[in-house]
Image (cartoon, rainbow, N blue to C red; front, side, top):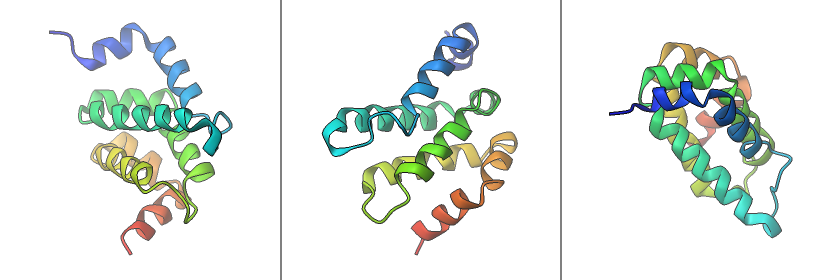
Length: 122
């Protein structure tokens, strides 16, 4: 059968553009546009699910999706009023990304993300 990585390679540009647009913090982050937050959450869940595979995780790193996800979290979900379900999904996705060398180093280079993850443990 087809693997996720095959799908990512075949439609690389389209998927990268789609995820970059969905994860853009400037688009739709408000109570009036909660469907955008739902779409962002679905994207985060999907990223976490497919990044169980190291090749998919590397694809996410190489296409700046890891950085886009981190920027979204820093811009929209680091405050105390953040949606706890969204924060949980970010942590779940980061758990998968941290299990692979290439994406692990991209994440731990970002001090704000590391501090945010640690603060969730308190």
